[in-house]
Image (cartoon, rainbow, N blue to C red; front, side, top):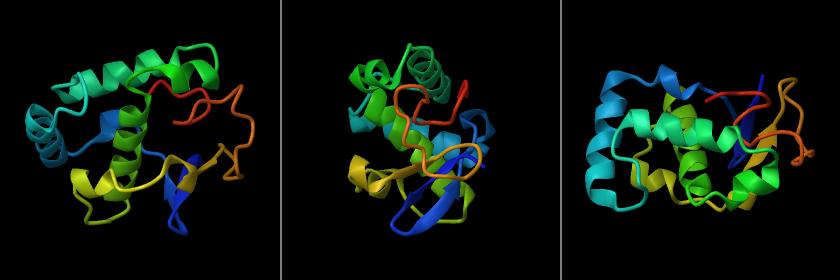
Length: 124
């Protein structure tokens, strides 16, 4: 079970394609006014995540200008899927170092050179 730990709670990775329609509408309305990313649609969010995941290593992924945005969308969606009542603005209120990434076995993922932050071998 890949995922992450944030604020002492474990979250399971959720593919970006599995977003609920209501959440997708919320994201797209938020993106239209948030000026936080080049993305304007959920399809843009997915395309950015795929672009980042195709990069050769974690260092290259972290250097991508949309990396933190993409991670935040992943964190937000997993939190929503877990039942957290968290807004997109609230989802931005964390430090990247506060997230502990878990590999497919649910173990802390220390090998940043081989794995991406959204799940080992994941397209989304």
